Image (cartoon, rainbow, N blue to C red; front, side, top):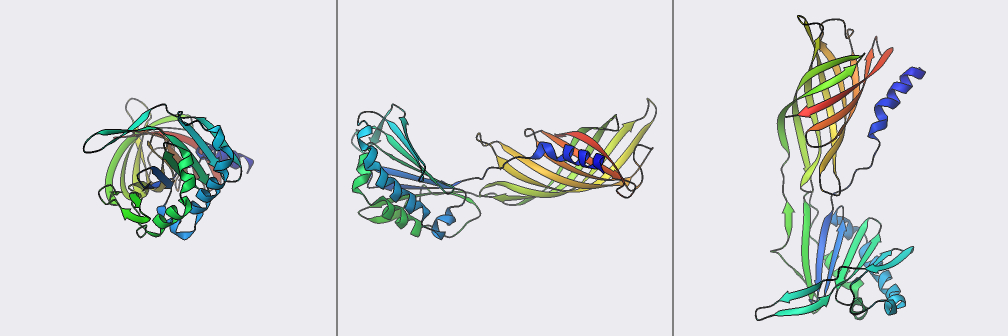
Length: 317
């Protein structure tokens, strides 16, 4: 039993991690002076509570206490984490020009305030943060929240402006990332190591791929795995596993696609003596990049009485 647990831990250990969500964004321009960008995993959550207005109101209450620390001719970033931390650091030293029909207007350097609260990140940009003390920012944010469209399973980048206390949706800027769910036929090859034996294999799969927020979210699949065991120069045995599996996708900071997955397989065709009859296997996989995937596997024989580990490197065509 102890040996079984060692094998199971060896399979599970490489796949402990945290997946990242794909954010929605809501951008608000207030009186052509202030830009507010709200980011979170699903914009519809803004309509379920008043968290966005709450954190903005709390920040406005703290701002007068540090306003003398800010320099008018210098770009600065103020980071506020609800009820715990407020920091000031140098920002980007660049000037921003507004392009009008007749001329370019120098709007000066930009200050930023970054507010974080319960999965929300709100970025407020303006040429002087003191300006926001004269505006009911919480009310402006709540007005936009009340104007948000209905829930969508696609990622959304929504744009609004507030002029004279009226919310106007900027239709030409709003974006959806519209990808449909698909059924895909795929194939690949791989190298496996088990029982001190190296095997080359071919895999054919039917994948049911589902998208959420404009990017691949998860997929289930059925696959067949032909494992080639070269016994000697003249003899080759082929053992075939039939598998069902599931993958969950996530994206890193560079927006690169990765996944973790699990798979359960059964030996449906046997040659030679490498595998016993009624061999099952359970595996966990993690993508290395778009072409390579590493898998840890646990093989089970003799009515789940005997266990041994295996590893596999998959190469997708």
